[in-house]
Image 1 (cartoon, rainbow, N blue to C red):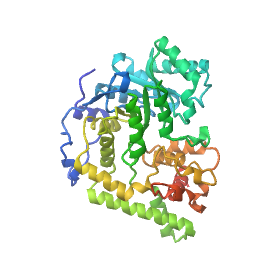
Image 2: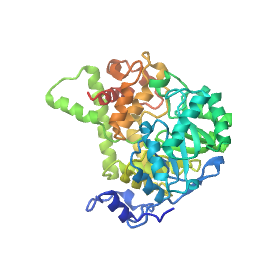
Image 3: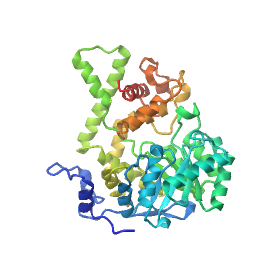
Image 4: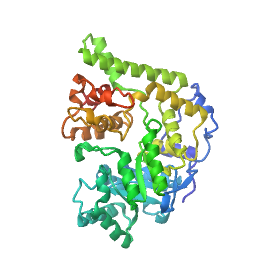
Length: 442
């Protein structure tokens, strides 16, 4: 590893402006977890990745949209040594950027995971999978990956997909793969159709199968119960646990502005649309109250606390946020080794009280059986999360456009069967109607 990166040098090199001078500080800034500004940036904690035995950085690198190898170069300098990529990320550009960043590195000190999808992108038989994996290695400029995963495993029956397991055995014998894994973040209806298998049932099946060493799934402070059960399943089988979608925070909604524009124009909304507008007015008021109570300047402080929340769980080995910029890299690496303070814990609890019901839990499809039109509720609201919370508008709109079957277009005029079935009290019609407007830029 190279010398750890000094924060001032990092900020200067990456062009990040230091802001906030003269601004009243949040009480969260006064916690013992707050790091001094001139302290070196770098990973402070490593954890054993289950039965792989590899010591991975608690902050990993989700390379889903990586197109700048320089960002990963700095991450490696900081001590980040868990990299998550896949054959389809950025149409293969993610793997190319990872390969570029790793060219002159000690390969043995970095754990690299890639993924193959069994349902699209080519055949899922032995020769097809081996051919596609060889292309992964070529893009990565590597002789092997540490872990090969089934990507977005949608159904429990895919756990037993024997061509995949045969490929894993052959690649292990050839020294091209060391471990096997899977990822799951709920259904993906545009490809898989309307499956009812939950994240818990899919990863639980993998744990019982015994041939999977690492899992990547969803866990966050608003989606605790299912995530913690999955973590325990993995712990009982000594599987490695890596996480995605640890940040459920979205304290602003564009629909509020849209509704205000309608009001100022004097246009009357239909009765049901007005009810949806009233729901979002309640959401906006709750968001404003939350920010005021905690004297927050932005959602970034909540997101930092959300990351510390999952790192507090000893069953978690590495968090893999999507990183593509220097400021994203800094914000996540600065959290390495930190723990949730009492003030932050209270803030997250308050967020759940004020705004938690406006978050459709990732990997939960409890309500979908109740929809008479078969709308893929969880999938659509995941796309809208990409749009609003992550700023990945083009990506989200493209995935929505490729959905097969019914979309959220008719949700404003629905009787709300999904809302009646939701165990979390989510105003699902409101969120779906907002998602539709966002994802078609209405």
